[in-house]
Length: 234
Image (cartoon, rainbow, N blue to C red; front, side):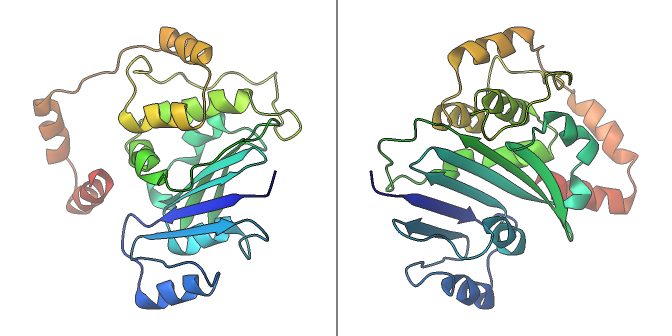
């Protein structure tokens, strides 16, 4: 089987500048970045440098797949909008890692399947199906995080360091009815149906906050907090 690697990067919060697109073009002679996207395909060699640094410098989401069995999904967040203490229980060394680089927090999911992938459709854009996971995490919907944790449990022990003495992370509500992006994650990363059913049975129904409650809460915020909240939900 010949080697195959595919990287897809997306910028969400702002478009790339002309200078940034030029810098990205210098990473590969074949890449043609747009204002929001760059894709790299390799049958020989690899992306120069650390893809996590490319993500931290230019983009908000990265998807990677290699035909020997590695899949990776990573997100960049403004570090002021994410809680390390909340993310930490879902982290597993070698599979789900959370780091801070400058003003950014990087959440990196990497899964390895020893059997590899027999065929990869490089005409399919994967990230549009998964991109809403980032906004869901920003809005404190941690179902995607929990699904990633479940997937990590099935990864090869050669790559993942699972401490069986640690407690299971909090089970978020609403796992019985996943969002489109969460459903796409379970399909693209081939999450076990048995694990999904067990997780859904342990998950409560999500709380619904009435509109008047939202209005009262927002009315009590300062002007700066209101601006931060507006950025958070858009």
